[in-house]
Length: 174
Image (cartoon, rainbow, N blue to C red; front, side, top):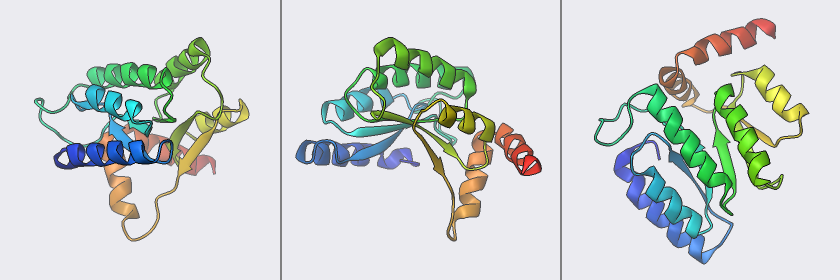
């Protein structure tokens, strides 16, 4: 899902598999793409799990929101909708403000524990990760590895330069 040219084929495949195997398929969606609200509805209807992230790649304004505020607003709207659906919700963000908003939404809609999780990168916002875990929220921490770990890390840093500061502060704290 990291290249908009493959989004339609990926969503269509996930929808087909979701109908054939309800609850056994999951896919990532990028909140910054203009098409994502319609994709989310198709996937929810097919009972596909959804990993919602903001989106990290330079796309034209015809395809994606370009301003941070627009992306954050789109993410919040989509996450709110996802949390009212029956789909397994995977909320992938390090943005504490958005997480606090979503924790209120989870409480408001009485989302059942075990039907959603937060997802973050290892080494980024470790204190926030510890707090979510201590409060009993399901948290998945991604650890890049293999030959492509460095390009992956560079893409994450490029999407949000503040991640460098979070990462370095985490290293300094040990």
